[in-house]
Structure formats: structure tokens, C-alpha cells
Amino acid sequence: LGGIAGFVGGRVDAGIMRVVDVLYGLPYILLVVLISVAADGVIGRLGLDPSSSARQLVNVATLLVAIGGVGWLTTARVIRGQVLSLRSQPFIEACRAQGMGARRQFVHHLLPNLVGPIIVYGTLAVPAAILSESFLSFLGIGVEEPLPSWGNLASEGLSELNTVRSRWWLLAWPCAFIAITLVSLNLIGDRLKARFDPTHGSP
Image (cartoon, rainbow, N blue to C red):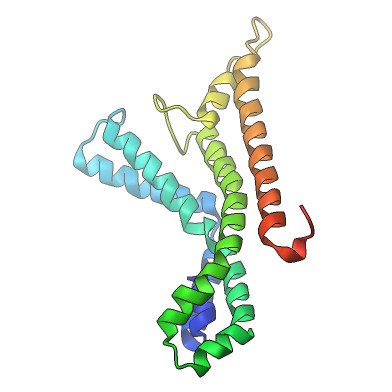
């Protein structure tokens, strides 16, 4: 959508960017809660058991829709800016001079130049999605038992912290794996940015 907005311009660009602005103003937690309430209503009308696999599937789908619904916004803006920059490059002007169609310009010339930024920002967006899912599952909104999630494992471990017999490792290990995964993915994103973005500096 960011690429199309930057390439087509005009009203299409304005319309897509206004949608992005509106979605930016929606807190994703509120979005998850609203979708969860709607999903619970549908499950109640269908008479499904809350512990059934269908209910678990709905919970996971709710997370995917909520996190995915707002997770692409930053990438779309970055790609739009890249397209606006590339449109003024000599190779695109040469394509227009040759009478090349807009679709061929976008697919064969612009899109290959966008692979690097897409990979980089996609890699950087994954840690944010993992953290969001873990946080929501920790609150009991996202993935629920018996499906495993670092968030609900940490929530279960939190209840084991007491003065009688503290099983601290039940909380420590999920949090440690979340931290290790997020740091690792951020380091990978930084390396990819150094690899694909010539303005970022040498790797």
C-alpha cells in the first residue's frame, strides 16, 4: 500500500495515507479488546465450548488481526517515502521516456529496489509483534491455555511467586527467552539495515 500510494500519487496517495493516519490513532490494545468482545459474541451465538479448539483459533485470529492491522503502518510510510525518492531517479525517467507502462515500471524497476527496506523494517517489526502478543497473552486477552505462549507462561509463573515456596524460575525463563529473542532480532535488523541501506554506514 505504501508503494502504491507513492507511485500513483494524487488522490490515491492521499486516501491511503489518511487510512494510515486513522489506524495510527487506534490503540492496538483497544482494538484487541473490541475484536475479542465481538468474537465472544459470535462464539456465544454459535454455542461453542470456551475450551474448544474453535475458541482457541478465534483467539489467535483476533491477535493476528489486531497486531497485523496496525503493524504495517510504519513500513508503509517508509516504503512510500522510498518510492517518492526513486520516482525522481534517472532510471525511472528513462523508463518513462521509453514508453514503458506504469505496471512494468513498478514491478520490474521499483519493486526490486524496495526489497532491502522491506526486509529490514519487516525484521524490526517482528520483535514488536512478539512483545505485543506476549503482553496481551500475559493479560489473558491473547493466547490462552492449553496453547503455549511466553506471555501466558509468564502469567502462570507470576502466581508462583510467594513467600512460602517461590518457584521464581517459572517466571524467569519465559521473560529471559522473550528478552533474548527480541535482542537477537533487533541485532539482525541492525545488520540487515547496514547491509541494504548504503546511507546507514558500513556493517
